Length: 158
Image (cartoon, rainbow, N blue to C red; front, top):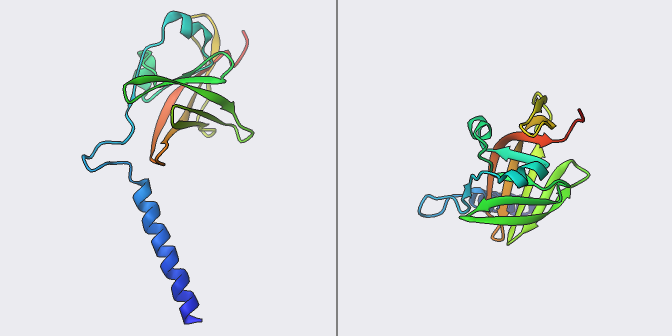
């Protein structure tokens, strides 16, 4: 019995140690394995987007986004490691949006506890302001998670 318990304990500790190493998103140089950069949407794209998210409230107010989707929310765009990348996917039954492409997987989950506020954007369309969490996974299993703030355009009709 002691041997069985000891074996289970060793397996548990080894699994926890490996998990802790995988959750460390910094490389030997102290940099994150994935760099996410902000960008400004072109006017034509702004008219067709469904979701627009920024890392900070200030970025959102200055129209500096890290994530946006097309009008059907089936295609998403992000600037990762210096390149604007296109992802495909969409909403899951769990109300988490998941997109893949170029060796990355992105998930956007919404903070349902936050106050959702109806706002009017410059295209005279109404939207719902919300907060969420953005997780980006590369093909090596490294992850960068960020809190984001933004809005869902056309979430409510005028």
